[in-house]
Image (cartoon, rainbow, N blue to C red; front, side, top):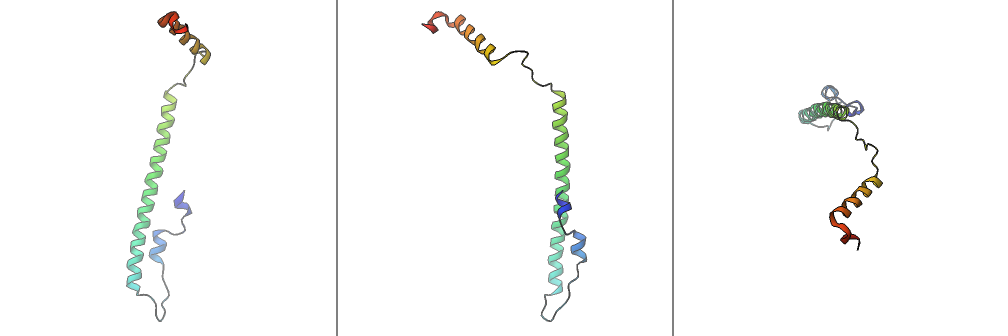
Length: 100
């Protein structure tokens, strides 16, 4: 799963603390930006969960549908048999005109 491959969680971002330096960034701006990232992560995780559930539902639907529909059978009919029948039908409908 994609969520398992991600290295950070929203909680990791929220709890991350940065060291301050002489000419560092404004902590308020960093916090505001990290808040946006946290919201995106939460949205991403929610979307992943919804897509995984939909994927499972669709797989089950395909499986159920394939169980209900029997496999098509040719009942011993081959392409040669079909062509032969078609030829006989053409002879009957069009008569000898077709083969003159």
